[in-house]
Image 1: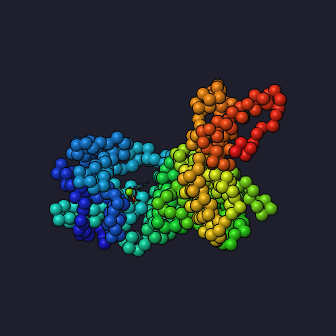
Image 2 (image 1 turned 60 degrees about the vertical axis):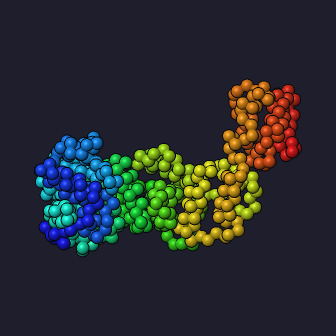
Image 3 (image 1 turned 120 degrees about the vertical axis):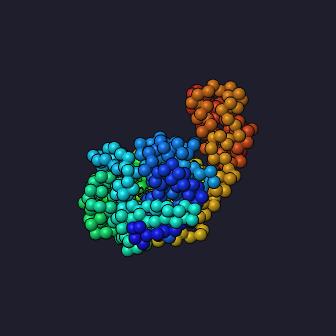
Length: 472
Ligand code: ATP
Ligand code: MG
């Protein structure tokens, strides 16, 4: 397909309606960007972007209930028929990019060609201009040859690649995303410019990098391909130097490769639908870069969790996401054996946290795949998983599940609120983790009374404490 070629589409009614209503105000409205690229590739777009020469206030006025509160003049319209929201953006010409991050100013443009000219890659710089919305007829607007590049399997920057990457360094990472997701080879000049400008990615805001990395991690293609490409191009070292530090760190695994290969394979073995878990897989062995001694990586889970915390803060991840990842890294080295008592299983669950069990076992399975390890059915982590979940379903594992609480202890033992009461509850929980049968009000009170007595007696006589077993 070429610039100006006829192209018929079956548009969702909500999208056709947006185009028609803007046209009815006398302005031009076209489809643009990712959706046109998808249509040219013969795929159904997931989201629809419209560009127009009408200024944002005029667009907003044509759609009651819509609003625009962003510096880019994007009006989001939610069609009444429930089809996906349509983003309408006024043609733009961007100003300088003195910080390599964001345009210093955005100016409204007047022509579609200007707007397409400021886009990153030719495949993203195509538009569809309707000629008859009722029948879905229209033409392809493709001044930079995006359709031809798509057909040739080529990713090419719009215009001078050096200029494009110095305007916005995020395009370096986007280049890797589009190339790997769409299976395109980078055009030689574009690729050479990516390498030359890789260092500029250091100036990107953590949040913009995070969003791109998550898009890479949620792609169906294995993360090892995209992250491998980032490494080859010199971008991984700039964005995630903690990961490139694993390159060359030897591993005594059944599978060949160093600690970075292993980390990439662990990410591959986790589901695309959970990019946060994939990120945990990617980062789970960060600590191996600094702890290798005598063929072992003693304490790498602790070191690694700390390194990951710094890295994730830099990327601006939420506390929840970051906490989930660092806890997983911290806990990933558990070594189970069939000799574990039920009490040991309960302590394991308590240490890990019941909320993290699913993720931790998923990470272990991925770690095994990436190491070439096959665990035995008996005495392996699948068995621990079954026992851990049985414990979660059946046994009290937290202070709030005890058959007594602070109020009961105060009333029954006449204790004052304070650290001694907290310590007594902790001790009761320990006893119940050892033996869930103790978790009955009278048994716990009996224990608590004995310990309270012992504590006061202790101060006088230093007597031996009764053990919970002796109380049964
Ligand atoms: P996806 O299907 O992953 O959403 P997309 O092409 O829609 O891909 P977006 O990031 O949603 O990608 O951007 C929409 C369009 O805006 C792109 O197709 C491109 O034309 C333009 N664009 C987005 N970010 C940039 C950028 N940093 N520099 C230049 N153009 C950009
Ligand atoms: Mg998009």
